[in-house]
Length: 247
Image (tube, rainbow, N blue to C red):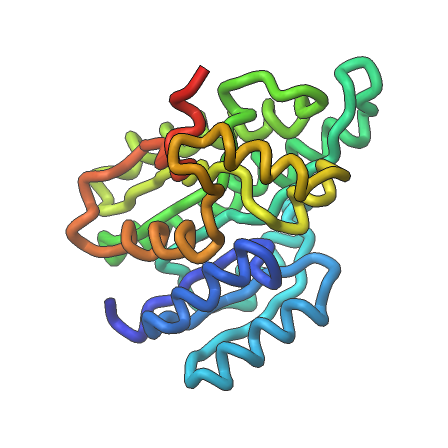
């Protein structure tokens, strides 16, 4: 890939977003790291990339607000690869989902994907190349306890990606869903208080007998940016060691 290409990673300051940022930096992309609140983590990621000889820029924006997305995009160079990794992941039973929680989950997870894609599309169309990814989970297609608002927002994201894939395929743009299994991230730990115990239990139930690493997921996303992956679009790329195939 050419060194002039840029990747925008929402929620790119830590966890999976940080690992994706590192991976693209090593591939000579200009890495644009969006963060919402944790400036320290985003700055750490930016500094590490620069120490390694890469180029990175951090930018604060709440992707749950269209005005903030507008402001952010205006400050950035044209985007060649979009990875919507930011997530609002608050769990609760169906009866206790508040209006605020429901709307926030849908705007950060799903609406942001639509608005971001609309903003990056013209440049991708003009150069006849673009890659759009979003991070989903098994909760988009299977009912996970207390995961309703997150699962529904992820299902919406998956549907959106399929529509992008069909409508923009002739523009040289691919859009895919990356659905990793359980990962040891801050988001996972915030959803499940007994995160370590749960990860161990999932690993035992996984045919591969382990959970996926952040680096493996970042690697796969970068690989699908290669020009020879232009025919893979609208797909749910599961990376869970076979977990979702088991009963």
